[in-house]
Length: 162
Image (cartoon, rainbow, N blue to C red; front, side, top):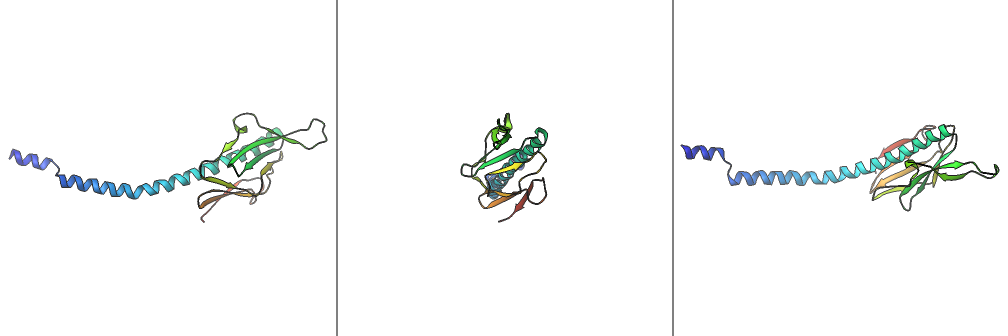
């Protein structure tokens, strides 16, 4: 009887192997989904960072009374914020100068994320206006559109399946 109790409490080798095989199959099916999910998160984070900087530039332009610009370098996947400095002679056009602080640094897009923009800079006026434009932020075949054309003074993210 004692021998029988021990057998009831233990798992057989076949049962253990069956559980390991089932867990392996489940893990194998979920790993590709993690890869796609990570790519979508990286793309949305990159777009969120750009839109955050755009909204910051708009607020900074209104509060400081000086125009701000976000410049894009599509070849090297980077972008940065500048402000228009008043010319010393009062006659020549305003020149862009770097913004102090952490928002004035050059930002880089994550690996494999690319920026497609028809313009090299977007301007933000002291009256809250934003240059009307659209640009794409893409990761492989999936792209998100960032637009300032739909509503005056507002940045919109449009998710489009390609």
